[in-house]
Image (cartoon, rainbow, N blue to C red):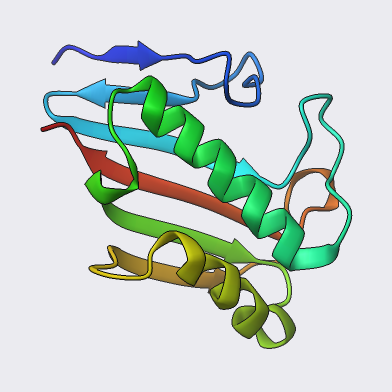
Length: 127
């Protein structure tokens, strides 16, 4: 197995313990993104603002790998308050995946890094 590490200055910098994304074969595995600023502070505005920031970061990582959102095959979303935040998160999600959406799982979790309300990761495919 060979793997290629994806790094782009356009996305939030990863911590030293993980890569922004890894390519193996034609598959791109994008690490989870939370809604933070470049200086690692949570964005203000609740789950919708955090969802938008996380998806914009994911989009930047995908661009660094040479693809766009249309190449996303699967999305995993983690919410700390599934009951309260599922609908508001979906409103923002639909701005990014309005047609031909990828497969998706949304899971409620106890906590996320930095007190984030949402984390989003994906798997995409190279052309």
